[in-house]
Length: 150
Image 1 (cartoon, helix red, strand yellow):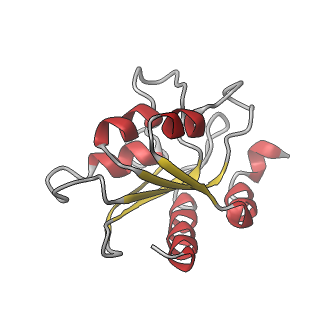
Image 2 (image 1 turned 120 degrees about the vertical axis):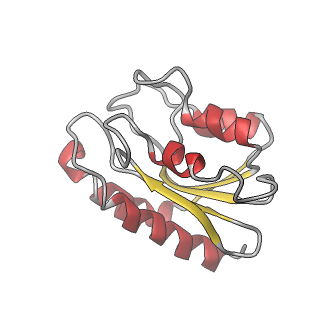
C-alpha cells in the first residue's frame, strides 16, 4: 500500500462514518478492511447492526471465510480502536489482535470524552501490529463528531 492508497481508503472510512446513526454517548466511526491487492473485503460503521456495535467490530464480523489470511490485510478506522468498552467484554483492539491483522491505519486518537485513557494504538504496537496515523485526515473524521466535541 502506498501513502496515496492509505489516504483514499481512509476517505472511504470517513464516508462510511457519515452513515452512523447519531448518538450522544458514542463516536461515529467508519472502518474498511482492504486486502493485499488493494480490494475492499469488508467495511462497517458504528451502530450499523445495533446500538453498541463498533465500526471495526462490524467490519470484522463480515470477513468470515472471505479472506484466506488476515495477516496481509489492512484495517482502516477513522478513530483509534477501543481498548476499553462498557457494552462488550471484548474490545476492538482485542478483536483486531485475535483476527491476525498486522496493519492498522487510523485518522485520530480517541479523546478522553468517553474513555479516560484509550491505549488501543499502544496495545496494538506492543503486539507487533504496525499502526499508521494520518493526522492530515483527523479533522475530517472529527468533523462528523463535532456535536460531541463542541
